[in-house]
Length: 260
Image (cartoon, rainbow, N blue to C red; front, top):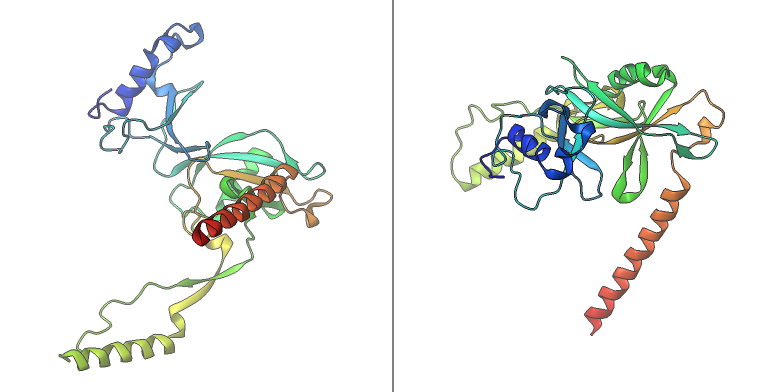
């Protein structure tokens, strides 16, 4: 393929590859039933390429890049306010998770917040929002990060423009005076920072950083043992321990190299 080819043309080229062209179950497949997405370093699925008329060059798809191809049962057209997520319902008793559920999250005209996401998830897992807890899986750390809706974090308000308007002081000393005055004003301005609950924040911003292909663990807090459950699995705990051992070994080796 050429970097001037579009996503739709790339999909057509994939369907014409011998290993797919000769499969009877894919005989009538069209490009709108082919999903192309990036593959993350941790081998999990990433961003979906939605803009079928954009070229590979425009989307910065270069030679040697790893892409994931998914064949869908029905045509798919994702909008800008839609994001594909992977859900796993928590099995508290066995400290594990059930099978993956592919979920198309649409946040319509409102901000994608945790409160809004929970409302949408009720239709999928039949758990009322007030009884649903959510954790995001961090593959490279083998860890599940619980999103506490009641946790409050400091959020900076947008800086007011024209703060130094009308100040005509010139010269190095005068500019330093202005900077000093501004710093003092910022300290006095307590309204510069406000506390907000996690349930009210944009899921695309910190600390959530929700993006395409993320894995979310869902727990029904009405189940026995939910109050002491930490979302972790035995496999993840062992992998984390192994990761820590490798980090310590790496530090030891690097330390030895420095001495030499």
